[in-house]
Amino acid sequence: MVDSKILVVKDDNIASYGFGDDHPFGPDRHGAFHRYLAASGVASLVHLAASEYIAVRADIERFHTSEYIDRVIAQCQLGKGFLDAGDTPAIRGLYESSLAVVGASLFAAEEILSERFKRAFVPIAGLHHARRNSAGGFCVFNDIGVVIETLRQTHGINRIAYVDIDAHHGDGVYYSYERDPDLIFVDVHEDGHFLYPGTGFAEEIGIGPAEGTKKNISLKPGDGDVEFQEEWPHIETFLDDSAPDFFILQCGADSLLGDPITNLGLSEKSHYLAAKSLTALAEKHAQGRIVAFGGGGYNRDNIGRAWTQVVKAFVDHP
Image (cartoon, rainbow, N blue to C red; front, side, top):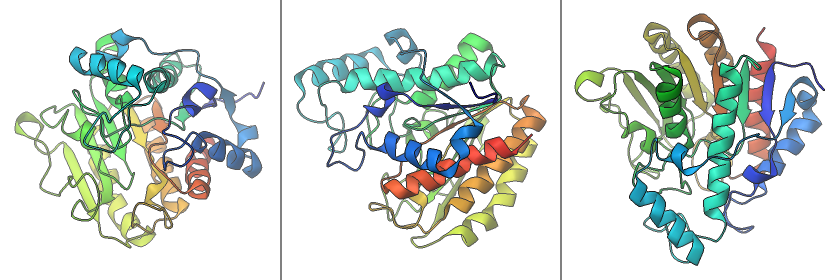
């Protein structure tokens, strides 16, 4: 066994989450990442483990409505139609693989809270488009929301930072917590005028008691490391001032140049920067507690490069 305090989930159950071999979100994404991680040598520096937990309905109900869960179960048993307006097919076995994703995210968070590991990464997770009562954008259950609610209801950790660098705006998280002052939200994404889900504009900073606790930063098509890294010092200050007790990073690789369904031009250097910075902030404010979820990314080489750099940043920090 590798003597490492960095956990990386490697699990056939989460690998099965996907919509077929010819779909952008195919079941090969998990293997593409792990092959790159192993070839890079970083895998030898972390603890690889399958999740020891599959979510149950009571976990999902911390975030999602019972009516929506019933609909997912029924439609996935039929294996026909869509769970949203046309992006998320209801296929047989999808309910079970969705439970595995949520379970892996909960497992990673629990391993950190137990202090068995300092940091954790789950590749097939971070399904940020699912709302409390609906699917969206290849996302059935919002494992991020379930983790947030579990941290609060089970562990009493209320002030949580959620940082999202996926090319798509994390609308399922933002609109679920736009009135919540203790969910510190930062999302850097492609401008919603050009990309699904068409949300996440600069004026969306939270509502009511949460006003000013949210930051949405839109990048134009073609923007890359220069524009991302110009924004990062402001993000770092914002998070430092917010002093959260737990950090969640959604590090979608679809913001890298060459993704087939997005238009940004980042490299893996920006993913390393974000993970390194957030790790330092977690050490300062949150007893080191940070978990990263892979999120989107549909160019398999980009997945390997970006996510490996996130794991490397976790390894590199003392």
